[in-house]
Image 1 (cartoon, rainbow, N blue to C red):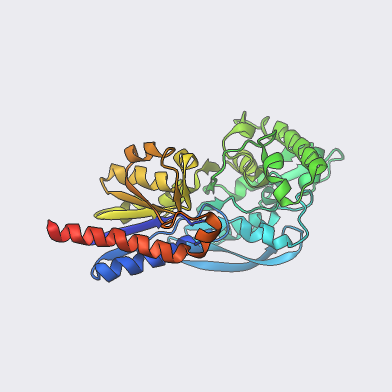
Image 2: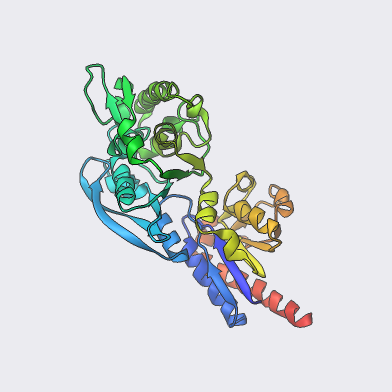
Length: 382
């Protein structure tokens, strides 16, 4: 083995993608000390996305103070890559659940600070911005983010204001002029791994509101606000149907807001990672790719990390092996025609998840050790 690429997603709640890469690399080099091992830890747009990119690509972390989700000042950051031309921003760094502690209330929280991160990156010269939509504590439709970039929201009295979840229904008019000027020549894309619409039973408020602190009454009120907001942005030129596009409801409607107000493309998180890291170039000449995720089941077939990696690798005829915490074999048969040549579960004792979590690191190490040991034996045979 001369070159192996590692591109695992995290085993959520158990092992980070960074730690998985470290363990895999250790085991590979113990068997093939001269092998070139390239690590590309996959993040889905939530907390840790910037660090994953910084681990895989040359870049720097920019630190600054921004408006927090409760309109307080907080410490935040983003990543700059490709000599400052590309910025990677995780919205959770300015509007994530941990930032509100025990004061969870999506009716009053804002994404304004996320817009400040984008604005700072643009002023530094970034022309491509990748924004991760994961781990939010907000339900403002991205209005705060847009306002920080110059979008003006007016109420019935013609006054400008920054809408939050419980004031979305008071927006009467939207002026995008200033933001359009700021973002001229800038491309925006959002990493989005959910396909929820903006509103309705499967929308942002109903599906994600409760985990952000909204009770039943608040969920209904927030959904009404999103419906009103949706009706406004769908009347913008070329934005018909934007409330229903996959990912519109991500991060409290931030997906819809970024798409409608800023022209952002909503793409699966894995595609954003692979595009930004120039994946095809990384895997050129590779003998093998090791990918993986915590649980491989029917959901994995909807374009998540493992399939995103394997489909691109298949086009370049690079074999892919998936190492996963748990596999539902009766649900994943199609992966074998999408570039995956083998799936290995690390749950070596067939024990419950709670127990398996405690042994996850050790079991991953043993599983990879066996895979590499087999490959080494086969290499000697041929």
